[in-house]
Image 1 (cartoon, rainbow, N blue to C red):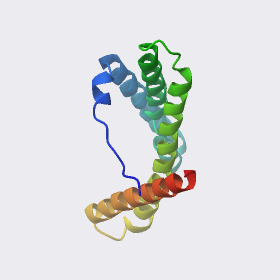
Image 2 (image 1 turned 45 degrees about the vertical axis):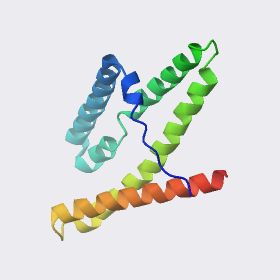
Image 3 (image 1 turned 90 degrees about the horizontal axis):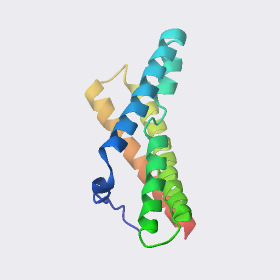
Image 4 (image 1 turned 90 degrees about the vertical axis):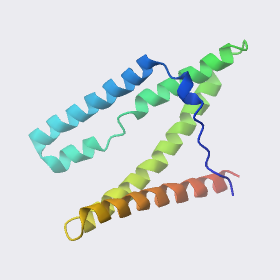
Length: 142
């Protein structure tokens, strides 16, 4: 079984303007979701709020970082950058299925149980579903 690793060293590579880009993109998506909810109701607006607002900015930044890293050693890093961005998108996709499970728990249980308990349980379900899908994906790739 393969472990899930967290690499905090990549935080040093991210520049302030990149955080600003993520913040602006996420904020814009949230405002648009609010406008859609105001016009078409919260059910439709909520679907757009679930859009992973930071992902598009993240994917392009990951590709850029990898390309620059390869350029430092005199190599064209476009292929590696695209591969890194595609791996990130695969993880984001698995996380979206976890988000769907989170939403299902909230939808079914929130009106009849304690909100703190339901949100906590939904978060655990999100982690379990995403982690289980990651394990399945990593075993299928072998």
